[in-house]
Amino acid sequence: MIMNHLRIWVEAPFDSGEPNISYRFEIHAQNISRCAMGGTISLQPPLWATPGDTMEFETGILEPGAEWEQAFTIRFLYGGRVRLYYWEKEAQMETLGWAVFDVKGAGYYSGDTHAHSSYSDGHSSLEENRASMLDKGHSFLYSTEHNTLDHLNEIQCFSRTREAERFLHAAGWEYTTTCGHALAYFVSAGPYPPEAQGSTPNIDRWQRFVDEMTAAGGWVFLAHPYEAPCYEFGDELLMEIENIAGIEVWNGFNHHALDSPNRRAFSRWDRINARGVFHCLGNAVSDAHTAKKHGNPFIKGYMRDLNIECLREMLKSGRFFGSNGPELYFQMGESQMGDTLYIDEEPKTVKAEILLFDPGGRIEKVVLRKGTKGTIDRRGGENSAKAIAEARPSSAEERRRFETSLELTVSQGEFYRVEAFTEFGAAAFDPSASKQEAGFAFTNPIWIERL
Ligand SMILES: [Zn+2]
Image (cartoon, rainbow, N blue to C red):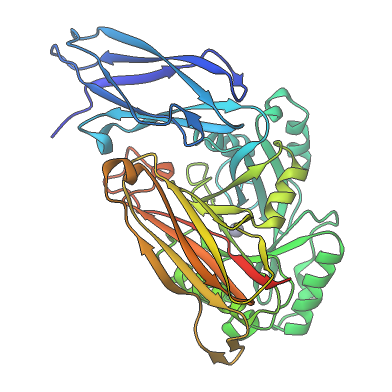
């Protein structure tokens, strides 16, 4: 077995860089073993950077305790909080580590919109949760305590500090309702009293709650619909609610995306969209109750800047993917994930393009799914969005960065979404764990409508 012989780290010339400027970094290594040795270090720049290929460095033989360093340059193409991964070439799983840097301005930002602190039933402070998010390369966090906004004051104090320039911390709350938990973002009103929901599940009362939150400028997501019997919305209710923003198809509190409670939520999500009364988005959240769990899984999307208005825009548009590592981008014609693609004739042939990036270089496959509006009603009918195409990388380079496109003949009422699978979730990588979780990412759908 290969042991961790080298301590590796990266030094940056800046606290906060800008896109389209070449920066000179240094990679360092120290021999922490008791004998003279050296190795090959692999370094993976982020997706939106040049060069983007995996770099390799030979340290040569180092005496015990000796240090080595080498300079390299990277130019980032967009803003965002980026990770530079490094590992000993022959021992990726034993030695994987990363450095995190901030690049200002428009670009791809990641974060978590459902998590808890000690202000409700979480076990860590807001500050500890923020630090964990920053270490993981995330830029925003919604701390959503149960039925309280007591944490708002502390978050407002943080937002007036210099630190807030590189991290967006927002206060939200998770509502307890008799039908299950829900999150409403961007609501200016205070927490909705759970008593007002009554003591028995009631669809009309629940719909009123959604409508009131929406009228107040809010955006309601259903939390973990299948987490536990006491939180379950029930299939019937899920098929009747209207005008929610979306559901948490991947709630990371207890389960991976591919575990059955989340898989059921994915399937129900597709059925809601196949019912077709409104466009329902899918969210990925950690629902973390510890600092360590924060940001796994996360969502990532394009923001013009790191502020609450841009986060609102991203969350409302559905232009984001959920993931624990792989980055996934999906486009049909000029429309991105979350968009509606308007067609002028039926059927219409359009080009679908998928880009998948796995910093660990272990992509397994991408799957395109298709559903059709109006094919089911609340009593049943044809199920969900079926897999219609699958593609696998065929080279080591493609296992790191996989671009695939296909011509699709589409019609009004259809919707398409993508899922991606990798051997392990690089962003969820835990050096202390004996087994790493599988990597997974999904996009929001692109809906097809007739002009
Ligand atoms: Zn929660």
